[in-house]
Length: 111
Ligand SMILES: [Zn+2]
Ligand SMILES: [Zn+2]
Image 1: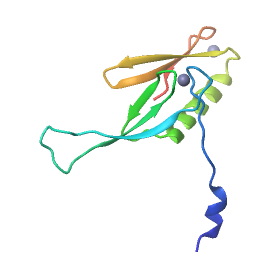
Image 2 (image 1 turned 135 degrees about the vertical axis):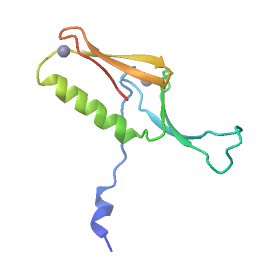
Image 3 (image 1 turned 90 degrees about the vertical axis):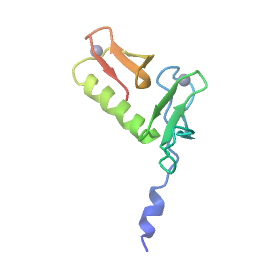
Image 4 (image 1 turned 120 degrees about the vertical axis):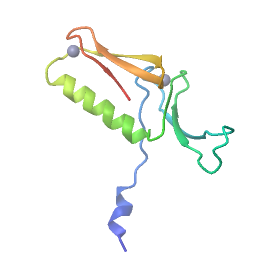
């Protein structure tokens, strides 16, 4: 039927912004063991890297991270040519990556 969609398939790889070496791996993880809410399991996606980075979120996918990364880099690149730094952080939401630039004081989060 929609044969043209087949051609669009490609293997997305997002290089880990923290170590810049390995690709992030998408791991489906089930939560909700216990707490009595049977049948209401929330499936959280985990994007993990061998360097120890593990981003987690209900709607987090490689594409989300990739487009966020690209948006941030292109947005920042419009006004600054500095090199951005990616620092893993943890807050109440879980792991995140803090994106900073020492030249223009840019500061944002990856997810
Ligand atoms: Zn990494
Ligand atoms: Zn900058």
